[in-house]
Length: 305
Image 1: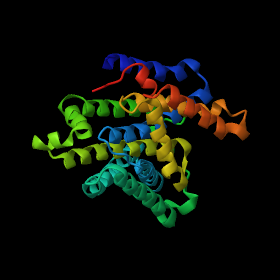
Image 2: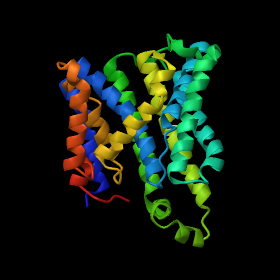
Image 3: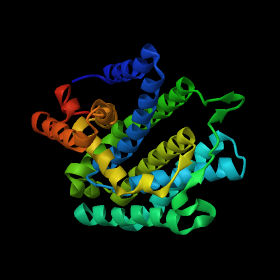
Image 4: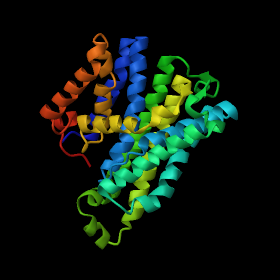
């Protein structure tokens, strides 16, 4: 079994690649990998309790709009926007989860699909303050104190820091006693209930943390592109993040990150064959599913606490 130290060493190695390359385009792709990896990680946490949430892209949008409106219209500092981007979807997930998490399986997936689409519909219908279909433009660049993080290397460092923090929180949550409870929720919930543990509260906690991570991804997305629109947060975005989990490995914490590392740059590899890009993407994914049934992380380890 690969230790946590080796896992973090692998993360550091992957994070260092754009720095060693020193190429602006590589930084751009790496920033997108980090943002998509955060969204995939939020879905991963839900999968670890046996629940598929298709609302994560909508929660990502909630974080993006919260941060964008606070910093652009109210002049709030970026860190305040980031905090709001984490708290807003986390609180929304906790409120909705009180009811939604009482059901499981395909019914939960359908309910979260509706939730995600409802969030996007709010962005579309309410032109004030969300901008409707036109979205929000001129979102200010991220800044921490006097340091403006507009350059790609600086913004990449911010994305890596947020991703590392999200991974650390997830690792602590999935380890120790809490990890045992979460493992029990997936494999033997009646046993967990027999020990007097409130399973609904634990599910709500995971859903809230997952929502907060998705919101952080939305904040980073908004301030990097300086523009957001509702279609960026529809269900196809959540399905792409789910695919990253499947490709990387759904039973390993590093799985969604590995999936993002592979899938986000994939369209660039087929850019020269624009007419056949979707076909080549599909064939590549099919090959991965056939030859790596446990995901890329399954080549290294099959289980992780």
